[in-house]
Length: 42
Image (cartoon, rainbow, N blue to C red; front, side):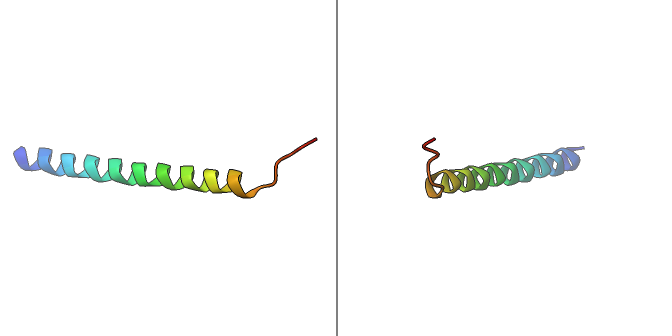
């Protein structure tokens, strides 16, 4: 029983880290896109 809980906690932890990394990468990409596109001055 304890081994299953430990494995489940590990899987949840890894999923949280992966989700955080993906969000950070997406935020970074959006920031670069905003910084490198010319402003729309219409």
